[in-house]
Image 1 (spheres, rainbow, N blue to C red):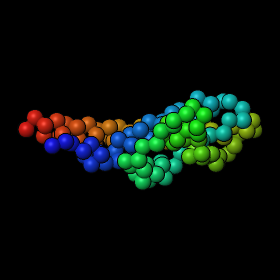
Image 2 (image 1 turned 135 degrees about the vertical axis):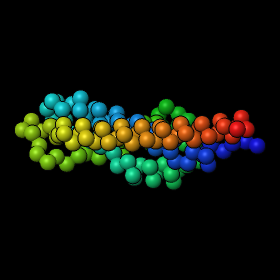
Image 3 (image 1 turned 120 degrees about the vertical axis):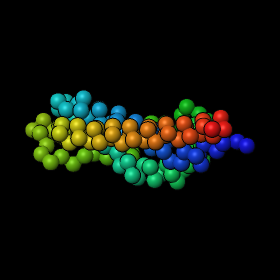
Image 4 (image 1 turned 90 degrees about the vertical axis):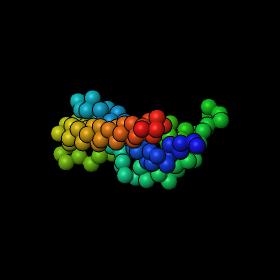
Length: 132
């Protein structure tokens, strides 16, 4: 009997990948806090997770290098939103370090929770395979 990992793991593996991508976006914002004109970006995690859930089981791949990339290739592009600043700086930079650090920390905690959940799922699957 084959194990269906999609049924066993649900959307959690995709949530972990999205959390990882969001961490990169937030880290990029923090790294550019002093860059004049830099516009802070973020992604709507709920919308992207809903899209991933709707596309579960559908594999899209490019067959030619000139084809437009899909969202699954880290091509978040249009899914990234600009953050509206509370108080923009004179040089046009919209990064608010307190907001970015809080969002990064919240995302890191959610990532760790998803990772812990997936780890326990895999331990359960391994126990079932061993017959424990």
